[in-house]
Length: 252
Length: 322
Ligand SMILES: [Fe+2]
Ligand SMILES: [Fe+2]
Image: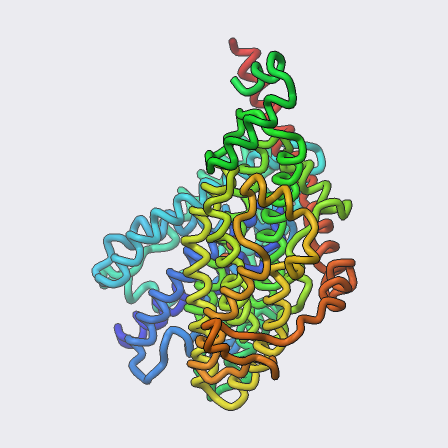
């Protein structure tokens, strides 16, 4: 694998993670438990679309075969997507969505604070902008996990269930492959494994305040680095890509 | 001060002063004395306005997950978010009249409060998103620009703020229609189909003809309303027809004609039977919109309860520490 190939794949992964989570969050539009939270989730979705545009646009440019951010988003199939599976998991209830957001945004906060110093200028610039947004996503989601965890019996039960259900999808975020190793050596990417301890400490602190039990050792789901996904991604894509696939000659 | 006065000054005298103030074009503020009928009229109108912003999120939200490009998705999401923000802002403005958001939502669910009839129509293809921005927001702007000078201060200020965003929405909607009309035959067909379905309901947004409009007399006297339904409708038609023609869309009205003498368009007969049928609950989406809102509200109850319970625990802890 060349440096260019690795950089393309790395950027694509960053873009896919943003794109797929933004699609999930946008499903909340008009479904929020309070109007303020409806708007907050749409706002996160908007931040993520912006990030997806930046990374997919850059990936298209690196690839250099005439793709654009839109053809990368709307014309690839399941097996060509490299987002972590956690991003594609269905929203579930509001507690579920906040737990997923906490797991992802806490990871991204660590990731982007290091990527700010990437030797790749484009990645560094997007990371700097993203970091501010991600910090807010992480603290907003953390606040809700605490409120729900330490709220009523029902909310505590629901949020604990969400934690148990999503937990097996958390470790994949820290998986390294050839792409990562090559780009870490170049000073472009981040050693993801080195972020895990800080991430887990942060999650443990939130859980302690939320009176939520940390799940025990369990099997961790994997596959997205090879383009293997949950069954959910295909449905998400068929909805998202409908117009582009049905009218391939149309410009929107 | 208003409230103190009311215990000392005779009701007739208060009403006379109020009438004089509104006639002179003074803004009425929340703390001022106002007749019950004025307060009731405003609560009805402002809560209906707030509910319309919120219910309107549903037909547009229907296309968020299927928007055809990243830019289109971003613009649509941001627009819907603006509308939700307008809802929040208008709920707060209405709360200055002594009604809570909970109570307003309760009235919406019980059918006592209404929302704009236009959102009882479905969004069936992507061009509907263009048509809503261009026609529905376009019609709303005409109405809201007129309301910027409405006599109730909090409402008028809300309108000033909201109008700025609405004109963005209108331009973005028109841009979608323009792209579609420049596109493939299928896209042009979608655009014309959307035009055909949204044109007449948009004209109905201004309400019945002036002779048939309830609630009007007091609203004019107190300067809540400053232009008649027909004046506003005419303004919208005159502004919109040339925009349609410019991009090659046909206005679905065989009787539409430019009147050189009046310097405006004459238009065909509005189907008021349809208008009344939809208002009375038999539009294509009335039940769907209301069931959606009620279900989401009920499904979210546990979240709101948890937030309250958490807050109470925190407050109790603080009190114990003091
Ligand atoms: Fe609005
Ligand atoms: Fe609008």
